[in-house]
Image (cartoon, rainbow, N blue to C red; front, side, top):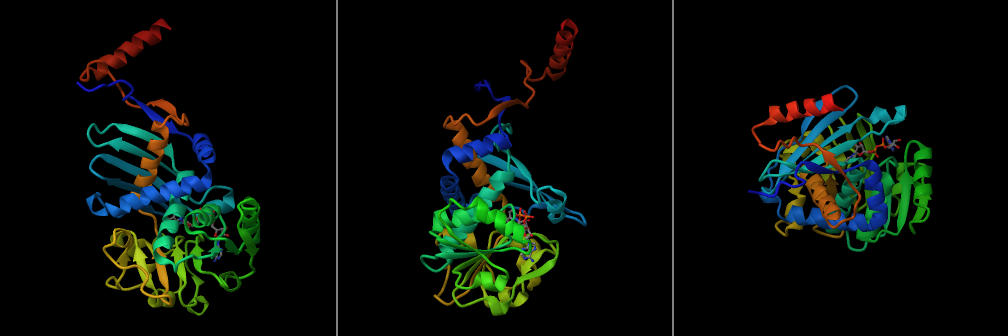
Length: 354
Ligand code: NAD
């Protein structure tokens, strides 16, 4: 019989513990480690269960469930996307997630994933940039300077060697917040008054804006030869960031086509428009950038396998004794498995005695 000890006590990582763990590890170190975990899972992509995420759309946003499994572990994330939240003092994106054992079906980790999503999204952009941008990119143009922004900048610094950051947001206070938060990062930061100014001299552009709209943050005239674009804010039907002409000029790389064709910027293109899957590039099964002048676009919407990688990473941290978790009494554990009702009755007895 298996050792049942502690199976009912599920490790739980709160927002506070996630922040402490990230700070104790070092944010850039977390981003480097997460990039490694995501890369590892992209290399074994075919063995995962894959499905477009289950999305419940409303006028103001979306609530999504993102499940996957590698046959040993099963993971899912609950995540929302509500651009109007920010104006009400709430997060646009919040999340929590769970990892479970396929063998028993028992959860092995429950965690906040708002901070973890920002880390894994940035790590995914960094991985895409490492595979697709021209060698030694130095300048990142970051358009949309909200909750995800600093993580994106630090991931490209830590993983790709970015040294210069050019910021633009329709709300200048967001860019100022970003500059303030990154003041000690070692990045040379320039605040810009327009997207056109921000993109000048950039090797990489990351768009991470939030607007439930067919937006055109980048238009064709802004895009110079050889640029790499991470477009991560267009991640929902009716929510895009790039003008269609930019898509038509770019080599497009995506996570999981059945999901990205619904949610990504490529929702603007015909269903048979050619795209390459990023995992194939990572696994050496498809070419990445073809030339110095090619424009490469990572149309990132966020896929369940990236969250699975993040959960694996976090479990490793917890198991290595970091201590940044609590134990939740989450799984009923009667002494005799079939005596669930008896367990409830015995509790009634204890309550009466108390
Ligand atoms: P946020 O609301 O905190 O920040 C968004 C920022 O975009 C705001 O500062 C806003 O002023 C700015 N903005 C809006 N329209 C703009 C425009 N036209 N030009 C310039 N700036 C503009 O949101 P966040 O949490 O930082 O998320 C950003 C986006 O990334 C969201 O759309 C979110 O859904 C998406 N996201 C994607 C992934 C992924 O895996 N691809 C993961 C997390 C979040």
